[in-house]
Amino acid sequence: MPLTWQYEQPQGTQIAVWEITENILSLEKKLPPNIIDQSKPELFAHPENYRQWLATRILLGTLLNDHPKVELYKTDFGKLMISNLYNIYISVSHTQTHAAVSVSNCNTGIVIETKLEKVDRIKHKFLNEEEKNWASINAEDALMVWCSKECLYKLYEQKALDFINHITIQKNDTTFVGHIHKGDYQKHFNLQHRHTKDYMLVWAIETI
Image (cartoon, rainbow, N blue to C red):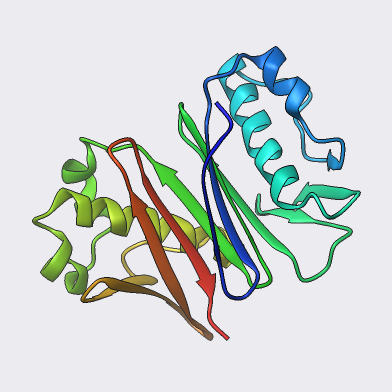
């Protein structure tokens, strides 16, 4: 199945989701020629990992089709970047059945996750006291916080970030804001989400 959902917003931000129903051969045929991925592993642990990799790169090529060459690499902290296009930020995520990407003129992160039964069992590992006031009862709210913190973890670009002590998600009616507060690093991020019967999608854009 091709692109199933696409959304554009200010700051040159594009979000897209692909439902992965194709086999590897079909996905390989769809891989755009403008995507040059220096971070591609020589071997994938499982064929499903390769299908997911292909789906995210197809989406990137689709959203960046105005650029004849998109050279991808990963930083030492595992963040996917573009080496030859400045001021374009990207993020990718996938489940077993869906792939999602965000492309923006601002630092961005995206996470797609299936509904997790284990969220209730692990929420003590990522909900701080402020978040427990609004996200500890509803499993969907808890999943929203989990995905949001994963987004901000990607944005931070470093590994030493504690989900409870360094990240806070605030809910204001139907809007969400994420805060990273670690030492001198104090930043705020707009959070948006899309929730379907199949997945929770959360993306973050760094505010200016």
